[in-house]
Structure formats: C-alpha cells, structure tokens
Image (cartoon, rainbow, N blue to C red; front, top):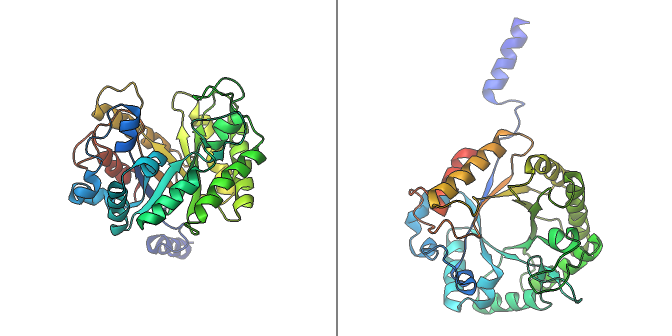
Length: 327
C-alpha cells in the first residue's frame, strides 16, 4: 500500500493522469466612436488609443484572442478608422469580430436588437472587403431573446416583437451568415444572448438556446464557435447560468460570459469593481466557469479604455480578469 501511495504521489507531482490545464480565451469590446456619436452620449474617450498607444495595454493584450466592434462601426465608420482598428489588431494577432443583429426582417414585426435589415450583412461584407481588411468572427446579438422569447410589447421601431418559432429565427439568422460568407467564407459564427429568468424559467431558456444553436448549425452547415452569456444581473442568473453552460457543453460549443458593471454605478472604479466581483463569483463555482471571458461595456461607464494600470479602465478590467481566471 505504501508503494502504491508513493506511485500515486509521483504521478500527481508529474501531472500523470491529471486533467488538462484550463485555457481561457479573452475578448475585449467597448463603446466605439461611431456608437457614441449616433447615440449622442459620452463613451470611451480614448477608444482609438488601443491602436495609437499599444504600450498602454501591452500586458492585457498579450492574452486577448478577439476584439469586437459594433455593426454601426463598420456601416458608418470612416475607411481610415476601420482600417486602423482592423489592421492594428491583426498586427497583434488579435481576431476581429462584429456584434450584430442577424434575424433578417421580412415581416411587419421586429426591429432593434436581435434583428437586421435584409441587406445589412451584405453591406458590411462588401465594405470591409473593399477596404482590404478581414472579418474573423460574427457575434449574432440576442436572436433568441428578441425574436422568440419576448411575446408582447413593442420594439423601438414601434412594431410588435415577432415571437418566431426557433426554426424561423435560425433561418433568418442564417441569411445574414450566408450573406457575409460571400465575402469572408471562413468567418466564424457565435451567439451572444440574454441569460435571464424574467420571462421564461431557466430550464426552458437553456433548452431554447440549445435548440436554436442546433438549428443554426444545420442551416449554415458548420459548428458554432461560441455562445456568450449576456447576463441579466438583477434576475436569478445563478439558477440559469449552470444550465446554459451545460447545454452548450453538450453541443461542444465553447461557453463564455460578458463581464461588466451596471448603469447605477457612479464612477469608473465602482463599475469595474462590481464587474470583478461578479467574475469572482462565477469563477468560484465549477458549474459556471467559462471558456471565454468578454470584457465589454455598452454603458456610459467606464469612460476610458486605457491604461491597463489605472483602476477603472476597460483594459484594467481585462487585465484583472486575466489574473482571476488564469491562462
């Protein structure tokens, strides 16, 4: 028995039979200058510093896999700004993603988040190819929540929500994917969607997201690259998140979370502190630990991206997230 114990100790020390080390992918996104202008609200004042001053986030950038921009950034942004961001990130071996509505509007319903004009993906793909830059990822923004789960009320376009069957949601999203793949055949596709218990029970929401993912994979003929949970922090996310992660793991789809604060924080530091406390709670539970972590804000805070050494900046949040979750 003593010999067996020694063998086991040696195996443990050498890592024999041990589970492979967990690898986490990190994403970064922020309120770009185009969205700031269109929304008439302040945003990240030094957004372009990410490419103009790379030394200001050198440590955090070393682990970033993907940088995400908005659809508006591509559709409305100047050619020079788009080239600088895409080429600057690619020079650092960081992939470029767009977060976009994907459920193509063909009926007198829907609009706003989740949805897309019929020609939007084509316009984006055509513009990017003409500029000589490459899109690596499409993040389909909240298709299930806004095109399936919400059954009543009106969209920002004063139209009823469509409440489509999941099969239709997948078909309409696939239209956007196929339009983009005319220009970028190898673009990866993933989902970002709401994790909330405000409209449907957690088990039902997890089932719906899983079914949509299956249907979408069939429609586009390729596996999905990720699912990112946009957590509704004021709901019982603790009950929903493990179910969502389990559903995606069963489909072999990497599971990620979007980390951020809330609109009621008053300072950059408070916003980032709340985000980090949320990440610590998620990391503490093996049932919710993500494969990917997205440091991102759509809110008025934080007001600065840089530097990574300054508490309260977006890259500080990124760097601290990397330290909490590890390599």
